Length: 156
Image (cartoon, rainbow, N blue to C red; front, top):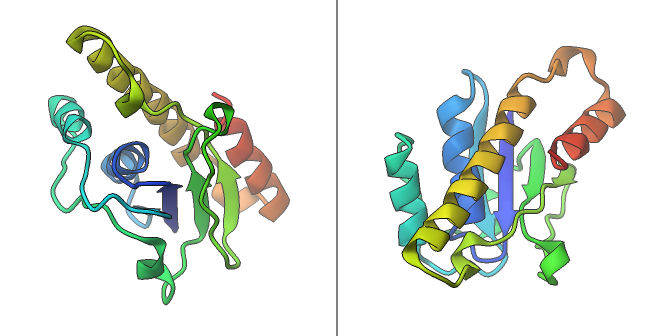
């Protein structure tokens, strides 16, 4: 199963999601990430927070969704923050789609401690959602049930 995490710039939230998913996922599951308008670079704080948490960062880079047009993912999860007025990217194709909105920690202003806390909070929320996702009984869920469960996880 291949899961695509999408955001606008593919520099922070989608990258954090990709890295955490691949760290915790069992064999046969893989995450990738992309952006509708990729920044071309990964947010340095995102890499720092992953490394501090012991999550590998090798191979992470900011990329566009067209890299996956010949090998579409099974599931596409957008992680942009609609509540903040962000326009979430669209992925066309037969993939199951869900939304796991996350506030952008890279938009946090304040002290170094406040910024770090925002990144840690985002990382913790992603970890909770991914661990719930991985525990789903995929073999016993039909398409509609799987879509509902993934949507529910996005509210954790």
